[in-house]
Length: 158
Image 1 (spheres, rainbow, N blue to C red):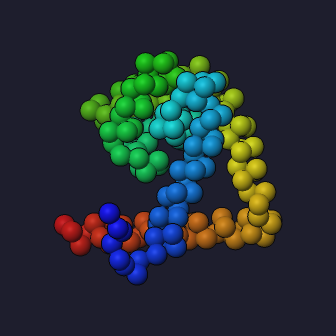
Image 2 (image 1 turned 90 degrees about the vertical axis):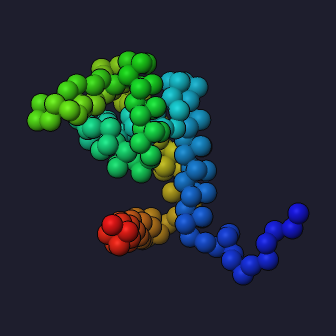
């Protein structure tokens, strides 16, 4: 079966390239914690967010990770079952619960963070200091613009 003839150059399409890069980097870093700590990529993403911003609701975790609610729900359930996270009723809204790392989750988080930072440094070593600064600024700019576009599209669909 032949591919559809089209002028669309997927290998130059920025959303595709960002997705592939993100998955490649995530998979490389996942090797650092998958065997050692028994965590999946979604579980680590949830732990990383909880380690940085807890207490959070599952909805807040989903928003900060850009993961869908089902992925977050499964990851959180697994973290709770493994004893890496705690769940408590939100005092301001008793219909919601707040999540945080448990003591053992915080210990695992503290062991993974330096590994992740070293992997990031290794990846960024391909760039000059000026390029790293530019990349950071460009990613911030694209993220802000993408959020604006998403809000505009959501508003137009309502």
